[in-house]
Image (cartoon, rainbow, N blue to C red):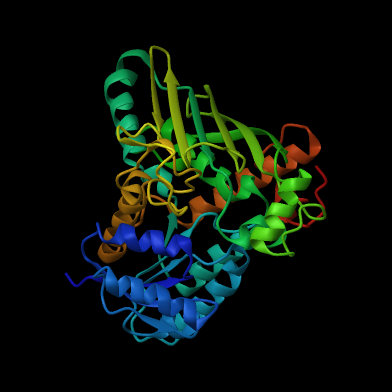
Length: 411
């Protein structure tokens, strides 16, 4: 079988993380990168070549890359506000091809609102392009293995799990646009809660069962600005990311919590709890998961790595992220995540998408799943704004835009 030839849209931190992950994936090469600037596309293409992933080259436009016969599938990693325009460009490129694209995979979140999610789903359906939703934490080895053991050994004897918890925390995003609610679509809720709610749902779902086997019936959420609207941190954001990131005028939430009540196929209640923050000060990115049932539990914490180093005060060097993503210190006891691309699920999710696109089969997560995550997030934002539980099937969510995304949220 010929390898899947992948083109990337976007050339930032996330694309470079995917490129590292692809070094662990067979049957694929990287042949193109398109970005908002040709210079950034050139840098990521050079990295792909350096990593031995193929003769990647930079394209001036997404449409040109989508139309080029050297590209079989496209991975979208560009900023959230570009989703619809990127999908429209891909659809135009597809129309110019003699052989159709084998797939389009999109990073989380699929869109900023239900209206945008509906649009990107429709664009790919009209173009006849298979889709994949890139939710790496569902493919994290600890999540996959933990779920497999619980459902194989414990559930048959004592019953299904009823409570899942997921949390993602770090000290803040890398790029300015993540901090701007009108571009990103919100704050930490939109940026990271998409991971946590989907992973919690995945843990509660019986292996092999359809997503529809669980029905979300109620969402309760809260958002807050705990750190980044303090005067000294408002100034730090301006100094780091420029005057356009002004949390004295247009803040985004840096803390969010969400509780989702599900019903299983037998009508039994299940609960997913998710917490996310941009104000966690620890070694670096912390992902934690729990699954609880009648006579069992499982837990995972990405910072409990089994590998750590200690640096005394005499060891002073440049700051960086060579030990763990979002690293916050260079001295003391420091955990090391030996292979972050694998530990966080990027390698496994890319392997999954590559094989399904090559074989012409449906991935476990598609744009339709990404749209359902957006629906849960919109219900969560509405709950946080109203202070009430929200039914995620409420048709009014179709036109809802969070106050943070409108630049009108006042913490």
